[in-house]
Structures are given as structure tokens and as C-alpha cells.
Length: 159
Image 1 (tube, rainbow, N blue to C red):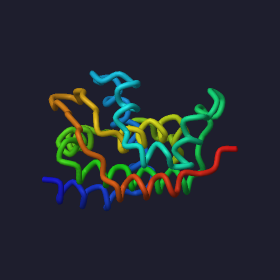
Image 2 (cartoon, helix red, strand yellow; image 1 turned 90 degrees about the horizontal axis):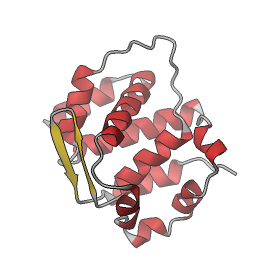
Image 3 (cartoon, rainbow, N blue to C red; image 1 turned 45 degrees about the horizontal axis):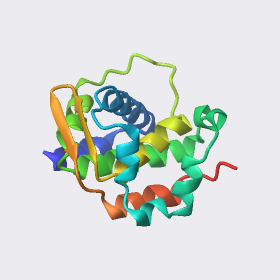
Image 4 (cartoon, rainbow, N blue to C red; image 1 turned 135 degrees about the vertical axis):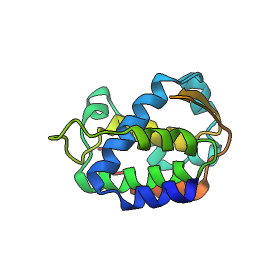
């Protein structure tokens, strides 16, 4: 199934990828069983020591709400969605979101809030996440080093 999901995500335009990631994030955090402390504690030390990761976690509430650039939003949405599609723990839940996604916000652009991007990067980095998205239980126990390196390296400087 993940190969077809990957093809679907690759065929999406940037705007749709951003909107699907936002929807997936919303459902993921709504159905979360793990608490934030558990999730962050389960991030391997090598990721926690990354400068970009520490900068992202240290942002202010005001910065959390700020939008990323259109280019950063598009790149992060694509990489995160493709990474989650390739992750057996996440793929079925993401597929359900993709299948059910309907774009009712016709004026919404292709920009992610910084907080949404950081939250999903944290999910990508952690080795412990439990929750429910729709009818799928998620029990994530691994982090893809290639995905983590990619999204951390392109996360914009916030200061």
C-alpha cells in the first residue's frame, strides 16, 4: 500500500500536500495517547543534539504561530508526508486521511504554521508515539534517520 500512497503524494501539488499534512497533524494530535514528554524523551540523543532541533524546540509562543515561507512549507510537507507514507506504523492512518481529504478551504494557501511543522518533525524524530487516526491505531517505534536529517537540515532559521 505505501508505494501507491507515495505515488499519490508525489502527484499532489504543494498546496494539497500542505493541507493534507495539516489535516494529518490535526487528527494525529487529537488521537494522541502518548504525552509530549514521552514523545520528546524517546527522541534519540543524536537528533536531540542537532542544532536545528534545539532551535526549533526553543522558539517562543509568538514564533510558534508564525507562518513558514511558501518554499519551506512545500518542502517540509512533501518530505514529511513521503516519510510517513514509507513508515509502516504511519502509512495506513495517512492513507485514510488522504482518502478522506476534501479541500473545503479554497482560499487556504501553501503555508504551514511553524508550530505544525515543528510538531510533525518531532513525530518524525521520536521512537515512541501511540495514538489513533480515524480507524487506525498508530504505534510508532522507529525514526527514519534519512527523513530526520532531511527535515532538520531544511528547517529555516527562526532567529
